[in-house]
Length: 461
Image (cartoon, rainbow, N blue to C red; front, side, top):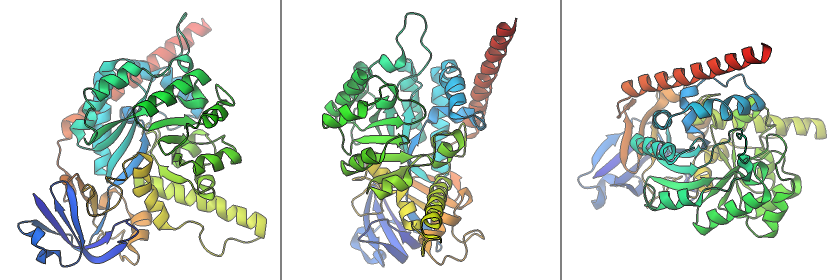
């Protein structure tokens, strides 16, 4: 199967190819074959379906490097909670009410929404999987959605019952990693592959941290971990991790608050990647996003939605939030230190677009497959209808994509050469799924409220 896109502004995010005015992209099966002009005359284009983009903008599929997709059914529930309230109500309350079917529904519909918004690759950080059935349900939801995903296998964080160890004392389950690699996620070239969502030094004991790092390295998996959000379980554990030479590009730190300047410098130098969730971090109280610190030390910034229970799943909004917040911090620092705003913006829109495309792909260890419109890579791309009022006139395609684009402009979405959305319409049925998502979310929320009301009454009686 061949597809030829013509008459488009092509933003490749490939440093060698740059942007093409009135450009074309030829796709065969799941691969990008060529990017350029006059590809109709290329012998490889013979028999291709020709799609006239009408002057729209073609970009690489967006990468959401960090999201807890299992919370899709809880939209709006945590919008007014601080991080401490979130821990109390979600990990110690709501999470325990999810059946495997709830996980399946939320993950499937959350992933479909990502496709609808222009995200083709999702870092799904699944840490509500108390049973293998919950884990399998999440994976099935991802696969049925048609999205590309790195499934980050995590672990629940409930309050322990009498006689049980705290979650920080429990190593990542080796048997589950082996089971998944031998079964549902055995294909390293599949659309859904495996990563590890480990507790890391901030949320586990030193012994557990070292075991989890070793397990991820043994199987060659990306190890992602939250950093920040209160006191560390094992202060000083990062020093031991460094001393053992365990840092590298396969280590992904989410958030990153509370790392000092020296750590940030050394971590970035070792290739550690950072996934920042700017909107949620500012909303819940993590602290200011570490975007600027990572940039200052030459590190890699990727972005994630984090929690749809708090905010929108739209990665264009996330990119704008990250860009605007860091520009504000930089402008403020310049005013304080030099008595004036900077002579020019400290961050370009091109860099911000990289955070949600190529840099996101690097953070998930997938940049050899996706992240740019480069011949030989997988055909993950998005066509934006830039002829609508909110995007015209297009004077600078990159800036228009970052600063003006909304869901309304996402015309078509392709993953591995297959359309998932076309002409503004998803190519997967959603009516039944939306009803199931609402029923699941409402039931879980109602059960939580009932439990909390009962607990309050018992405490005051």
